[in-house]
Amino acid sequence: MRRVPAARVGGGALVFALLAVFPFVVHAAWIVNIGVITVMYAGLASAWNLFSGTTGYISLGHAAFFGIGAYALAITFNHVSGGGGYTPFYVLPLIGLGTGVVSLPIAWIALRTRAITFAIVTLTLFFMAQQLAFNLRGITHGSQGVAAPLPSFSVSDFDRPFYLAMVGVLALAILSYAYIRSSKLGLMLLAVREDEEKARSVGIRTTGVKLIAFAISAGLTGMVGGVWAYYLTFVYPQYAFDPLILIGTVLMAFLGGKGTLWGPFLGALVLVPAQQYMLTRFGASELYLVGYSAVFVVILLFMPRGIVPSLSAGANLLRRPPSLPAEPDLGIEAKRAAS
Figure 1: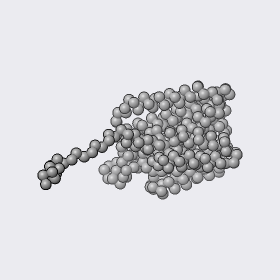
Figure 2: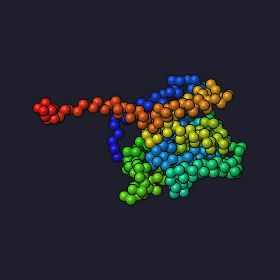
Figure 3: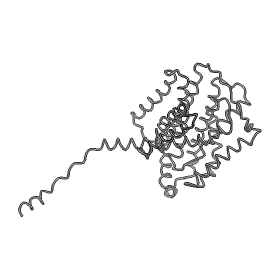
Figure 4: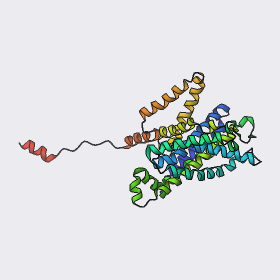
């Protein structure tokens, strides 16, 4: 495994320290609420990037695991007493593990396809999961929804525990991506992304490594869904399996830089506050959608590869020493003078 430079480790620790301090410094509930949504999308985009960014397979169905995680937490505490307080947060690792296991047969089917076909298959699976949530009334209660545990936090700092839980899942997603990228598994996934046929020809078990990345990514997505369900205290099919969550997750990963460590986080940090600001200013007329799209389009026009790759390319140009003019061939100059 490659060693990570100390500067990068320190920079990442500083970022998460600032994120953790944020709700203790900012006391306005509506700002902390925006922070919860921002970190939620950052976690979703980072989890999506862990699979799609490393393999090159564009999944359009990952939001299904968000809904599965949300329903898993709500249904669990409908049958198990003792919900409320911090207890549902302790169950999140089990929610992630269960979601990852459930995703394996789904991934095994979907990964028999590639490229645009894979994207369409995963999108179809997403809408299948949504319809199952509507129709499996004995489990999901259909359109009536399922109640999650009622949080017992004080009104003054109600959002803070959910924000910190989202930060914890985000940290786990980014650390998982960093570890995988610097490990043997990451090298195999990179080989799959660059040329899957050549990777298979040199002995890489491409299906196995893709399934591992998919399951980890789905598990992290399910954990974010579990926090969201507890935050809203009620889970409905149309919101647990929301195409807008899917679109936002993929757009933020592409905006920040697909296949980079901090790209999805930066994409969410730019787009979610912009979206919330537009919604506050123009929500009644739905003009906020135009402004929200304009932010995305402007950034892509100037940074088509995403924020992180574009900034990295610019920094490399600045660090590159200026090219020196070629020295004249003295032999040729002497011949010209002699003639």
